[in-house]
Length: 67
Image (cartoon, rainbow, N blue to C red):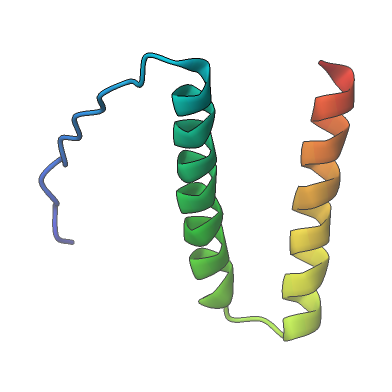
């Protein structure tokens, strides 16, 4: 199995609230793209992928209500 070198990422945190919110949105978008990419490569029918996605969305919404 190949081992990969760790990737270093430098993040310059914006100073204003609007900048922080924009950064949070971009990070969330990148995370969503990664999740969709992984789900797209799963070896299962589209219906199962949709059910999995719905379960993830339900869990996220439930965790937001509990906070």
